[in-house]
View (spheres, rainbow, N blue to C red):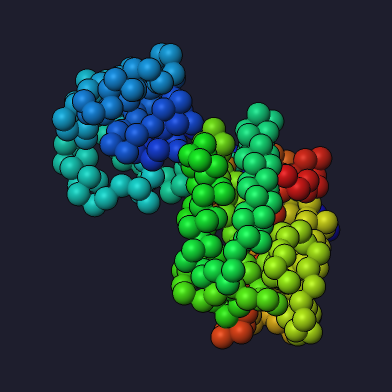
Length: 354
């Protein structure tokens, strides 16, 4: 049952700065790993050093002022003094103590306003164009999964480490796409660690393989997890899986039911914790509640983890245009782990799988 509450969007600050690459790209179409973007109402000033200015001139959106500097923070401070900015917003999760102390000392007449995750809040409602980019990214990701399955079937008893390297190759498609994150690939007991590192375990007949991966398309991320059974040299990443171990099959069916229940029953107006409960109650009822150790989902966009949070602690209200994962899991230490993940967008009050 949906709530009558509605999401209250954050008002865009009149003046803010960010060194976050996703925020920079969103604001002015370009980013690099050593830059500060200063936004003063509709004006945007991009500070970077000589290593990046040639490229920045080519890609920065029209109207963005480029400033080359050997000391980005000092150059921004000089601009703020010249413009007599009275209030400056920033994300305290992305600013170090030394930078903050410098700003305090050199801008005594400017009020510093910490707004945690403020830019992700500004981006939380996706436009139709942004949803289409995420959907395209996920479509390419699914295609890579199919290709990876054919690559696995050519191998004889490969290690996780080798499969992990092969997965990166399948996802990147000869360098055409960047990864959303380092893929998670694990066999049997290693899959009981939700974010397992690949090891020397080998894939054999009847084994469980958990694969969690995503790529970027025009900077927008995808994310998908499947848990599959490797049988007689064959593997597929559809949701229809058959395992020889009856307990494992029960766990798999429970996770699938939990995921599909959450997707089917979530509604705009619900809180993140309400949606989390839709998945969690299925797993609790099956007797595996203590083995579901993480949240049900997370937002996605330019970052692999964005707002909203779909967790037991999240009071954020879900609205049309939000895109997030639904990915419940069950993890039995030293035995196996199962997770199934898809991305959804909320449209007309309901979830659509991307």
